[in-house]
Structure formats: structure tokens, C-alpha cells
Length: 322
Image (cartoon, rainbow, N blue to C red; front, side):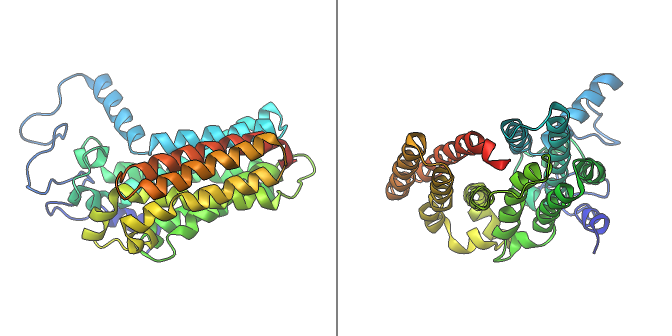
């Protein structure tokens, strides 16, 4: 099954709890969702410009805007810290942005039926604000733009970035429900600092400890991303690596890869700041895990703190990329 077939499969049924032939979510009770339009009941009020604005806003909301913006800004900042030229930084940002857009949109398009069945109404496709087929088409367009933008930064760098984007698509298409669900996150995150490095003058090799730390942050991001939805995922038959661990074990394990990343980044350039960062990460990570049994949300919050420390260290060590 290719990407087009997979995206079509996400919208090829009109059963309640899935999506209809136009790619719009069908509520579990068969009722109309707010904001959906059709031949009966009247469409949303307003002229064409207003409808276009709502449609664009819904489409942007389906790209996972928070992670997309965060990753794009982080890697653009990393390029600045590494001494890349202004034009090179803009090219890095454009390539990463289109790659992240393609991943976010493909995720929501492929998961439309599953998200609807789980009642995840925060997603625009589930609310019927935008069709799954429209989101899928946007994903393919973003992917098509990502290829030349990545390669324009240099063949080695572009190839590495596209491997990371392909890994993320593999997660969306297949690996999400397997024990290897962590692997695309590790590969995708590791590819990002390598992408920046290989596009610098002289195409220097990326520092192994930065690439490894980025992969560990990716594994931690996978655990943290899955944790809130473990129960609904299991009910819908999604059995990736975190789902097999279960919520209690995820809470215990979540800080481990992030703290390990902190240690690597600190050791890459010994100093007082690195030691303080490791101490903060250990206190937050271990404390969150120990108290997680009584306060289930605490490990996730602790992981966010540790991830923030890792991002700060990664930007601080950006000069080591060159």
C-alpha cells in the first residue's frame, strides 16, 4: 500500500466512528458534528473569505502546530548557534518546517477513524472542521516541497534529513502499533542535528554525543506523547512499545532517556553549567518517577522540565556542531 492508498483508507468508510468518503469525521452516534457542512441543516454562516479562513485555520490545527513550531525553531536556532549563514538558516528552517508539516498532517489523516472512535474532539478532522483527504493531500504537498528544500542544503545533509522524515512517515503508516514504535522517533530526532552539521562549510561530521543525545530526546518524546492516550490506544488495538509497557512503567521510564541525554550533552563540554544541568535533570527526573504513583501527572511534568534542560544544553553546545 502506498501513501495515497493509505491516506484514502483513512477516509474510505461512512461508518459511525470513522470518516466519510469526503474525508470528514463521522461521530460515533451518527449525529452531525459542529462546524460540518452538508446538503441538509445549512452550512456555517459567513461569506467565502470567512469560510476559507476557517478552513485554513482548521488545516493548520491538524499539523500538530505545537511540536511542529517547536522543532522548527529549535533546529533553526541550532543552525544559528553552529555559525550557519542567514540564507543557510532560512533553508534549514524551511526544510524542517515542511518535513514536520508533512509528518503532522499525515498522522491526523491516517488516524482519522481511530481518533474519531476515541472521541479526540480537539483534532480538527474529528470535529469535521476539515476533511481527512484534504489533510492527507496537504501532507503529500508538504513532503514534495521538503525534498528539494532538504537537498538544496547539500546532498549529504538533505539525504540525512529525508531519512529522518521517512522514518516519521513509517511510524505513521506502520510502526506505531509495533514494538519498534520508538525507532522512528530516535532516527528522526537524531537526523536533525546531523542535518544542520552536514550543511556547514566543509561538511563536518556531526559529534556523536549530540546525535545520540538527540535520539534519546526522541525516545523520551515518544513516551511522553503516548502517555496521555495509553488507555484509549489499547482499546483501539494500538500496541506500540509504550502501550505494551503500560502507564505505570511509562511514568517510571519516561525521565531516563531525557536524563541520559542531559548527561551526554554536559559531558560534551565539561563545565559548571553542565554539572548544574545534570543535577537539575536528576532531581526532576528521579523525583517525578518516585512521586508518580501518588501524583500520576508529575512524571510527565518532570519530563518536560528535563527536556527543557536538554534543549537549552543543545543550543548551548551548538558551536560543537561545526
